[in-house]
Length: 258
Image 1 (cartoon, rainbow, N blue to C red):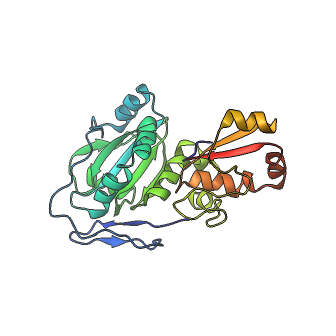
Image 2 (tube, helix red, strand yellow):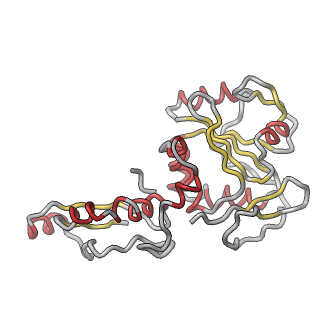
Image 3 (cartoon, helix red, strand yellow):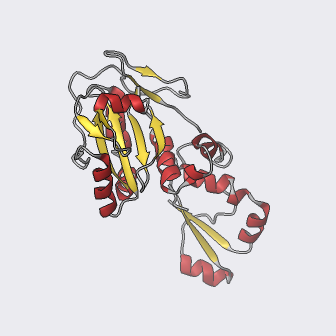
């Protein structure tokens, strides 16, 4: 498992001069959500569409990616700015995303034509209507075959956005809903939000791995985790909350590294 509740979806409505939050919001934002004075500039690593998403997908696959993401945004959307600067500004999120997908930006008010993977021609505006991306920013994930398999509609803070990436990249979407996937990590069970999971079986620092093994004569398990990580929370509230697993862990040493 890659180590990387349902919190908040906030977004910009597609109505001019209005910024809003979706009904699923569960926490307040701490940034100014008024429409921007200056137009946004996309990251220079975003891809420019060829005009055909099938061709864009082929290019992404040729680079070793697993699919394609179409990003739907607005030029003066504060939530789009938050997504681009906060979420994609986190190095490990950006690295994880870029290793798996190329991103094609779409202006939901744009008039340029683009051919979807179904072979039909749409304007940027028509494509955004097709996928009901009336909240921005929104993302549509395409698999290797060009099938849109997941839509992320509205702004998600980093914890939830990172979880969404893992949900798609690891193929959890094939067997469960995103809501169920998020719910499987029981919030507050072993951790404080933003921190590492605290478990009694973890050896306390400082660490000397070789000496620990030598002194105990037991196997040593090292857990590489990070704070504010849904997949880590999923590990602790699932497998590491199982009686049989816990009984096995007691037969060895266990160290947690951030």
